[in-house]
Image 1 (cartoon, rainbow, N blue to C red):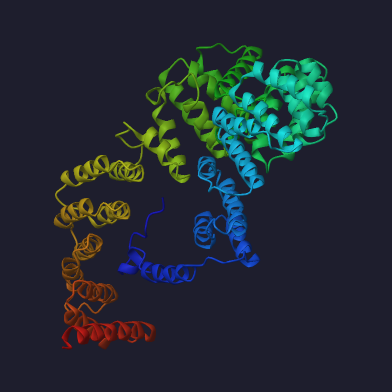
Image 2: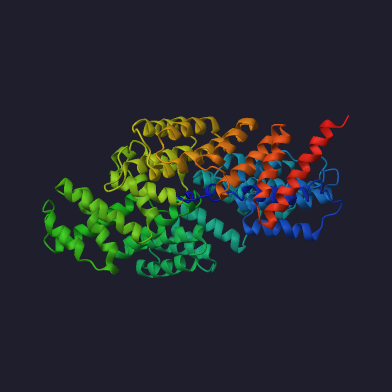
Length: 606
């Protein structure tokens, strides 16, 4: 949520002055795609869309597909583009849209394509964790009875997977037995699925025998977990191999997460508390985004709290430290080196929850929080305080943690979390400015769509002062820009008028006229906008010939033209042209003046 520069001196610098050029350029580019409906699919067009998807420009890719996909009356080309569309939805993880698109397929498409698309819809529902909608697609496919043997096997496997998503192990086992009867299944993928079901059913020895020789990362995961729980593999062996697997899959977090969870479980069985803490922290770093109902093993925040406390208590007992005597515990916590921050965190976690004095608990919370953030474990901090039974609601979370979580949320553009943790925090963190804190809260509310609450905060902030110093006014304007960007122009105008009445310096008042004009223009009152731009151009400046004034006068000319006052618009731009030396600006002004002449001549020609 980056703020605009605090001390710009032109409208362009202050509030994205290049936006007109960017909008115009975008319009030209998009106009080039309009109406493109090729009779045959161009490899170049497909490559363009594919490159956009890989590059992350999925909205532009979807717009191109919408424009390039021919009607379904030319089914061969339509299906090629439809597959590109599904690839885009998969890249976005937009499973609901993919399934909805399949639900609206045109009639008279080849049955092979329809079966493929409906299978994709079933997969999409499973990826979204919606088992019953997936089974509805699969039942339709199976009951139709026109799939190949390979398709039937795939659909039956997806049905089994749907039971795993539901956690319905009994039905998964029943479907598994039927599948064995109907298909001679011995592929690697099938054995892995079967072993997964057996693990979920607690039949660990059977699962280990079935998956023991599968060398894929998924297969190793099933084999190690089954071997650990069956007692077939020593915990120390699983610990080493699981950690190696977690590190090998670090670029595939959906695999790395359960591997770290398995590492933590193996460390607990191997009675290695330090490696258990390490694995739990790594797993919780990934858990919120990458946990899945289909994964065989996962972690919870309370497991890490428990691991911290057990470790600290064990070390404390060996050192004959007494719970309730905070000073020796603090001394021990502070004695850990920079390479032993996990151990230090365990001691601070114990003091944060069991310290005898409120001061000790506050200090321990602060240090635990800071150590996690310094080590890049912000997600762990979030889990410990928002996904733990110890803190069933945010009111129980220490204020310092909430302040730091708010910072992390804002940095990551997680507005929902920022709004949650800041709710009720009316006073800023120690050492922070109260006005800045209120402005930050207002900005979060704006980004969260809670405009009345944000406006109440902003209005109250102005009502409590007789004058607005420049530093405060500049910061306040940054938040009003967000309000304008959200389209709340009437509210922005009201607050800008309040600020103008309290602003100390003519420079700020001059700028405020400009920002009010921006909002009036957005509301369609071009005559009022033109007046305000001209007021801004000359306010406290006799000629308005500086850069700010020239920018304001240019926009005034634009607004006068939109208001139908073409003669006034032309005169404003001609005056501006006489004082402009830049060749590009002169060319732009001359084109605008010529267009105004043409409009005037059309309106006066009988």
